[in-house]
Image 1: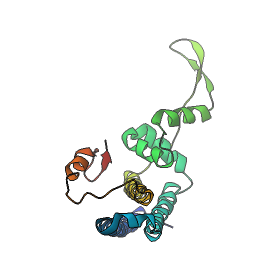
Image 2: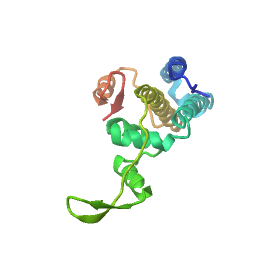
Image 3: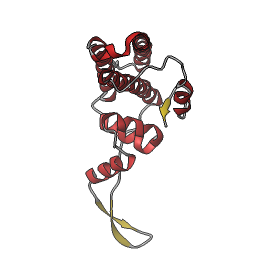
Length: 198
């Protein structure tokens, strides 16, 4: 299991896992590039590379779920993120559901809340009130989640590329003419090292 009661030990373990996974991912990308350079059509027959992609994705998902459900608080963490750090929260929500939005999660949380009747002294009337309660989380813990989440996005992208290569949707352009087109499509998101396609 990824976590330990001591958050500092968990940070060290997560850092080691991230480093090892990045090496595995880089190696997989080099393999994909080499294979594409030599014979791109061979991806249609290759089952080994797809298994490597699935393996790393499964491994990272398991670590992510361990960390997310630390103390059985997975939904609490997502709720915390939605209200406290919405820019990051959207990327967490979309890991499981590409169409998930902050608004749908907020509506779900509100829908699960029980209304109370409280007296409003200022208006001198009773009102029905819904309050949203969620625990606060250590910023170090949130950063660990972000670190593992980013690995998941990498593996998701790689597996999508492998699927496209296996289906024959991708061709090889040895001239490098498309390199600038791809570079133009990459946009830096909030922090160094985090990228997304336009």
